[in-house]
Length: 363
Ligand code: GCU
Image (cartoon, rainbow, N blue to C red):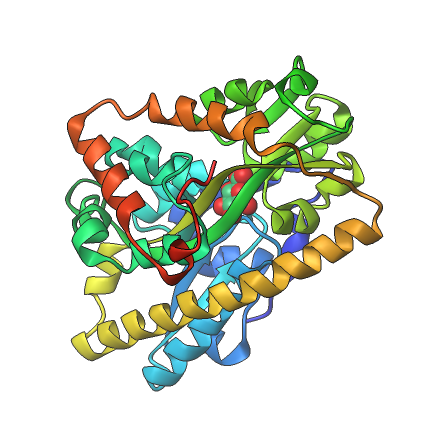
């Protein structure tokens, strides 16, 4: 199958209609038609007998894309060519809020979905997406691997939404960046319109940081910054660089407000449609990709920081207590049931080697 570069589908100058038209076309035309417009991936994985479609809102240089490519390669190898995967990058199949529905109804097989979107489907996921839940990436991965904590939660959307959480890719620590600065404390963010993911928790956290939250899909942020509709956003170094937001918002403030998480979600009926040995190969390939992701993430974060420095970004490291206690308190106010509180505390109590040296209090 031939593939045009997906970048055509995510231009910065707004062909939103084209993408929408494409989305509407998916159920009727099948993914083969969409593939002509936006597919990439390693050759063997995309030449398999059965191809799993994977939706991603990142570029082809992002660690998620690279780890999913690795997943496809492992899968095709371990199923002797019966199953492979094709990744649709750059929101070619839509923004996460729409795509999670497409996975739910089986039009798309797998997608990377940021925690706030999952929390919008089920509040039970909320304790994992509050400031202070995860100290660092090691701790987050330890929690993801702790079946007694997350096993039931990760399969809880199967009956209602046909969605299975396969696991997660870290988003690392998230920070705020702006078109003006430096930002040393909440007063400096007063009146600045900061893009947030579409979630009431993120709206509140941004208010606690001092800014005015503006919910928006990821793929719209560059244009909105450029148009002056936004003064800034919050994300990790890798997204800041791969989305080229530093070109317009060159003040990056290490607010460290949250260690974020992307869930990798699959349509459960599609998995059940594989024979048992292939399901096993699928699970093993995903575990390998999740591990590979952590390695890629560390590498790409370091390289993104170097690129930020080269590009002349002003990186500000505010006082530890300038933002962290405010967001921690704002986050905790969302723990509105004994069950949520218990899960949040159980997550925080998970020990790792790195925890021994830490005071356990990420902002
Ligand atoms: C990160 C994350 C994405 C998410 C994005 C956002 O880049 O990996 O899944 O969509 O943040 O802020 O929307």
